[in-house]
Length: 434
Image (cartoon, rainbow, N blue to C red):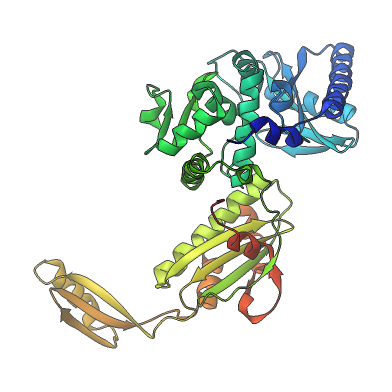
C-alpha cells in the first residue's frame, strides 16, 4: 500500500502559502467591500473555487466573485464588475468567458475578479458562473477534512494521467466533478473502484432524468441545478483513460500515478513509415477555449476532406501556443491514379442508374461486374496530400477567426528537416501511464 498523506504533502499548500492566500484574499475582499459601500452598490464579494473549499493544490488561483443583486441589468453588472476589478487589480487585464471579468497577479499568484448574479438552488441563471458560489457552499457542507484529502488525491491522480481540467483543451474532469465524485462514493479508493469496474455511461445518481436527455459518457446531476450535467465537458477518450488507469492503479498501486506529467516540449519527426503533414496557422488574439474549439474544428474538417478523397487516415493532433500546429498522419502521401467506385448490386433497380451515370464518363475501366455489383474504375482527382490539405483550407470554413488567417497557413513535411515541433512532442507522448 502507498501512503496518500505522504504523496499529498509536497503537493498541497504549506502554512506559509495558506497564510499568503488568506492575506491576499482579505485585502481584495475588504477593498471590494469598501468600493461597493462607497458607491452604494448592492453586491457581495465572496471567495469561491478550490481555495475557498480547501481542495486546492499548490499555487492554485484565487477566484473572488462579486455576487450582484438581480435588480441590476446584465450590462450594469458587467460594467460595474469590470470597473471594480480594475480598481483592486490596477495591472489586471480583461478576459471573457460568458461575460467579461478582470484577471491579474499578486505576488505571482493568478487572481480572477468575476461578477455574477445571486441565484438560489435550481433557479434560472443568466450565465453559468452564477452557480459557482452555490457550488462552493455545497462542497463546504459535504466534505470533511479526510474527504478533502481524498479530493486532493483524486486531482493529483487525474493531473498525472492527463484528464484533469474541463477546459476545451483538456475536455476532462473539473475540480467540482472531483469533489462530487468523492462526495458520492466516499473516498479516493472508492472512486477508482467505481471507474475500474464501470461499463458504459457513468450516471450519478442513476435515477436522474438527465440520463434520457444526454448521451455524454459521464452524467453527474449538479446538486445545485438538477437540469445541468456537471460532467458535460468530459470526452469519451478521457473517460476511457480514467477507467483503464484506475484498473492499473488498483492492480499495482504506485507513487508514479501521482507524478507530475511530462512537460510538453518540441520534438523532431520520428520516421514511422507513414506520411505526416503539419499545418501551421497564426494564432488570433483570443482566449484558449475559443482557439482550441476552432483548431479542433479545423482538424476535423481537414481529416474529413482527405478521407473523402481516399487517403487512409491514421491519426491527428493539435497544439495551441504562440501559434496553432495541426498534425495529420496518413498511410501514404500519394493516392493511386485510379479510384474504384463500387456501385449497387446488379439485382437492384439502382444498377441501371449507376450504369447510365458512368457510361459516357471517361473511365479507366468499366462499368463492369464484380461479383454481384456494378463497378467502375475512374481516374483519381487530387492525388497528393499537400494538394488535398490546400484544397480543404481554401474550400471550407474552419471557424470565423481562423478563416481570417488561413491564407497564411503553411503545410510542412516534417520528415524533410530536423526541426522540432510542439505538436510532435504532444503526438508522440500519448501513452497510458503504467
